[in-house]
Image (cartoon, rainbow, N blue to C red; front, side):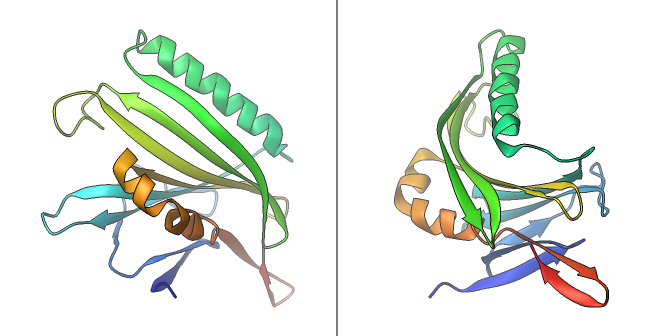
Length: 181
């Protein structure tokens, strides 16, 4: 059994390892409508090789997750062109799944980063990303848990990381009753 701790903020929740660290940026909105929280695995040298990002945003009406995933692929292509093909983005696999009775997608993708945000060692780096996406009809919010890591780290821990991502959930209150979505 893994040693996870639940994190819930504005009704958006995920479970993560107890030794990972939370980061909040003052540059990001953090409210019921939208938010972003980072949870990083930090090694002995105080460096992060794996980062879990929990995001949510209010959408205008119902969102078709399949269409959302297609749009994500389109946006990746646009980003690649804007970088003059220095950065490479690729969706490797899209898996439709169910989390707590909600339709969800697990997306496996990767990108090669050429800029300082991701370039830790001063060279292009391949970053592997696992994402889980859920749309909540109750609150009209899209919930996204993204885990970015190195290819080596993903190879060793993919099942464990997917287990973390599959804990993505939404907790809301209606009529004085707690609802898990």
